[in-house]
Image 1 (cartoon, helix red, strand yellow):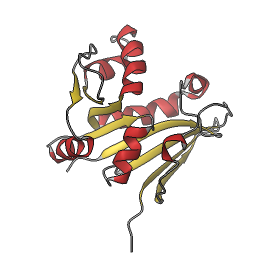
Image 2: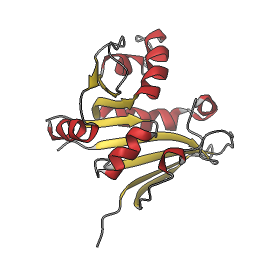
Image 3: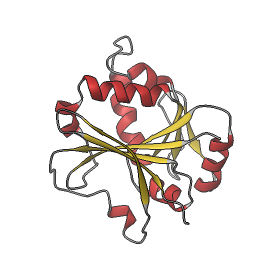
Image 4: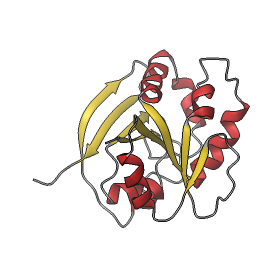
Length: 184
């Protein structure tokens, strides 16, 4: 069974939106881990808000420049959880139809590599509730940004996770990887 890996950039105050604050921290070490993630994944899952941001940014980047990652993002199979998107324009994108939990359960049951998901919102919250998220990787950045925080979509839900890996970069970024904690 494929694993669903959520990878989210976050500030110390829990902000995940419009992560322009990550640019000074995306150096060789971060690029290496980002490459490991994309090499291990042959599909990407996202909600509508993430799709709207990424589908504008990535197609305008140079796919011939290996440092951008544009070739991967523009060509990987993409699945969007949305009830309003009907005609996605970003290459190799499919809108999931019907019940989200059922659709993702079917995706995970297919042969293939990991499914990577960026950002953390209502789609991720639904999938965590359903036990479908295998790992969450928070790229904790040493900045305070203000604004809506990660916990906004989770105000009515609690979950416990166990730490499975921590990487501390010289520039202050901490990447903490967690998986849902099982009862027992």
